[in-house]
Image (tube, rainbow over all chains, first blue to last red; front, side, top):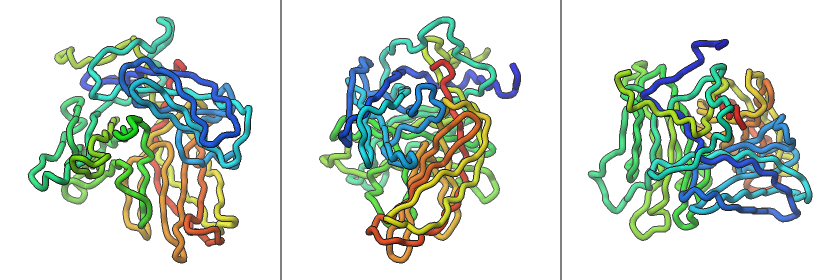
Length: 261
Length: 133
């Protein structure tokens, strides 16, 4: 072990379990968007993320995103899932045919899934824990619906204290979600959104809007805020998932979050 | 071990490793949106393998107030200049030993050339990798 202090293993907090892995070679055609799909056989919509590359050795890895930002090539590649399939979509400002894009897709199970998953570790000879690397403890995870504005006041805020008493799991309806912590803990957050009207789940951009602009409610966000006196180090992560009321299309949308130490 | 029931690690499943955590300041340069947009790449050195991806926290303090929020490997900021909406699309790509912030800046209002402002922000980045795949 080269760096003993980097080996972080705390039995109060779970590690990420990758319940889905797929390596895929995506061959472009002249269409944009161009979508392919295949079965994942999980029984639920996995929370997908991953990387893609122009080369098989992944010498340069791009995130799976629907933002066309990969320099002059201007390709966007992103993944979505539903209860049965994985969807990979390519968008390109100047579509080209026959180009190979190499993709690695990973997936977590949502906290709402309580069934079994098939192993993703392919070989007992694989070193699953590498002591040269750190492993982020999972401080909290959950799945929340948009705030129900028809209920008015009196709704209970979904809250938890993270980093002190072990893993926190929060499922329910947002009003909003507040996760309190004490610095120097510096957690990071990943969000996915399941859109009820399409049944598809997708990693979120956490887009920020400095000024007027887009339909802000379409995006869940996770913000950091001071929760105590200035200098106290008492902080909170506030996860906003939008607002809705029964009968609206987004009422059963789900924001999935995972918070890491 | 007092709380053995909390020991949650299952060798049937792959997991995600953290190769590094670093804090960087990035400045997207100001430039004229000739033809409606401009793009570029900002690079920082960091001890990571090529096969890496990121999750991040962005801090911005400037003319639009204070922003402190989680972002994925890609994010969007918007601003206004001369009555035009300026969008800054940012994406983090990883190579062996370095991280790149690829940016594209566009005038989202029309195709006229606007001298977009520079934008400076801090990113706390967790560099992640899956060493078995």
